[in-house]
Image (cartoon, rainbow, N blue to C red; front, side, top):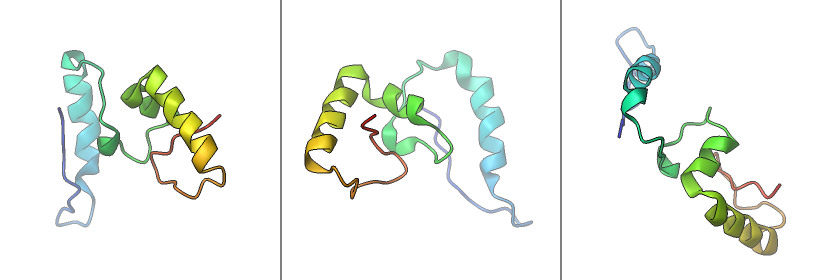
Amino acid sequence: MLCTLEMRTGDGLPNGDLRAPCWEAMRAYSTGGVYVNFLTEDEGAERIAAAYGGSTLERLAALKRKYDPQDLFRHTKRVLVG
């Protein structure tokens, strides 16, 4: 698992610029799995689907349609109901 902290360097730039090259170097050793809470805001629905898996995501979407039709409970890692 690759985990980084969001910190600022002395010049005010976030260290996020270091994450992408590090991840690309380690990608060959990755299982491809993902934890929902470790996703960044720029990762899309396909990464969220990979984190939950097909059948789990379908069950979550059905629950969301039933109990949250107004999409009140949403955040950057939303379960899209399609």
